[in-house]
Length: 384
Picture (cartoon, rainbow, N blue to C red):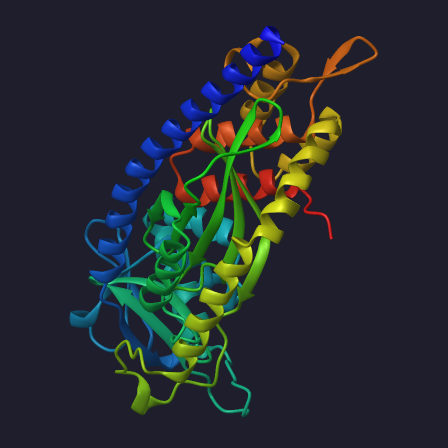
C-alpha cells in the first residue's frame, strides 16, 4: 500500500510540475500574441485593380526588380510571394526567373523582356469574357499579393483573429505560440489544464488559427496538441477551412476599409466562435486523447515516416532524424518512450509526431515550422 501511495504522490507531483511548465509557456505565448496582434493592426494594405497591359517591370540601379502600373513614381518592390503568383499567372517557370534574376546584365534584360511582353501582350480574360483585372495588395511600398479580383478581402485577419481570441478566452485558453510573417498569421492557444492520455505523457489541448491576407493559404481553424515536457506541437486536421473566394471586386469598392459590420465578416466571426467551442469541447478532447493513445501503441517504420517528410525536410535533416532514432539521442531529448517489438526498440506514431515537432521547434521560418507541425498532426488520427 505504501508503494502505491508513493507512486500516486510521484504522479501527482509530475502533473503539478507539468502544469507549472504550461503556465510559463503561456506567459511567453502571451507576449508573442501581443506582438502578432500589433503587427496585424499596424499593417495597412493598399489595394489596386489593374489591367495587365498597364503593368511594367524594371530594374533599379541596385538590380532590384520593381513593378509600376503607369509611371515609375508609383513603383513598388515585389515580395517573393507576389512574384510567385505573377509567374503562375503568366505561365513562366519560377526557377528560370530566379536564374535570370541572379545572372548577368543581359540575363536580367531578358527577364524584363519576358515579364513585360507576357504581362502586356498576353490574353487574360475574366469569367465574363472581358479583359481581366488583377488585385494588387501592397504594404509599405511592397507588393505582397497579386490576386484575382474575386479574392475575398472580407476574410481579413484583424477582425477574425479578434473573434478567435475572444472565443479562446471564454474557454480560459491562452496563447502558447504566435507568428506573423509578411504574408501569414498563425496563433495557437491551449486550455490551462494538463491531461495524461498515456501514463507519464502530459499534454495540453487547444486550437490553432491561420490566415493570410495575400493568398498564401486559406483561413483555417484546427485542433492542437502540445506535449508539455518538450513543448512539441502537433496541429490536428482542420475543423474549419475557407478559401478566400467571393464576388468580383468593383472599382467602387476598391477603397473599402475594414468593415466589421460587413455581413461576410459577421458570419465568419460566428463560425469561428462556434468552431473554437467545438474544438475545445469535452467530446473533442476525448477524441484527441484516444488518438494519442492509439498513436502511442502503433509502430511507424522509417520508410513510412520518411515518405511523410520527403517534401518538408531536406536530406541532411532526414539523415539526422534517422540517426536520432537509431541512437540514444532520441532518449536524451526526452521524447515519448519507444515501443518494444521482439526485444527491439521501435518508434511509435506518437513518438514520431513529437520528433517532427522537435525539428519544428528548431525551424526559424514560421511557414516551414507550421508545415512540420501539420505533418506531425497527420500521425494523430482522431477516431470518428
